[in-house]
Image (cartoon, rainbow, N blue to C red; front, side):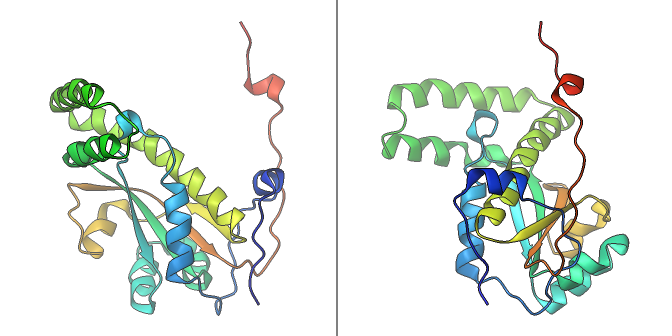
Length: 211
C-alpha cells in the first residue's frame, strides 16, 4: 500500500512526529528518495556552498554496520526503510566555481556579480579556521536536515532525527575521509508502524522577545 503524499503545508508542519518504529517491509524507491533529497537541498546555505552530503543507508549490510555505531537507536535503524546520515563537506569550497558558473549559465546571476563574489568568497574561506568553517557548516546542516524531514512528510513518510551514534567512527566505517566529512546527525525514514505522540512546545511569549 502506497503512502499518501500531501501538499497541505499545515499538515506537513503540525503532523510531523518523531517515529521510532517503522514497517520493516516497506521500501522507498530510489526515484522517490532522490526527489526528497533534491527538495531538501533547496535549503539555504552560507554563500550558497551547500556543504551537506547525504549517505543513504538502506542495504542489509549498511544497516548492520550502522547498528553497531548506534547502540541506543537499534529499532529505528533496523525497521526504517533507510537511515540518512547527514555529513558536512569541510572542503565544500571546491565546488564554488561550479556553483557560481552554473548560476551564471542558468541566468540566475550576472557574470559581473560572479566575478566579484567568487574571488571574495574564496579569500574568505582561505582565512577561516577549521572550527570556524565547521560552525558555519553545522548551521547549514541543521537547515537542510529540517527541510529533509518536511520533504519526507510531504511525500507521506515519517522520520526521526538521531544524534546518538559514534560520530568519531561513522565516516571510516563507510569508507569516507573522516577529516573531510564531518558527521552531523542521522535521520531515519520510512512508513510508520505507530502513530507517535504529540509533544508540548513552549509558548511564543516564553521563547520570543520584542524590543
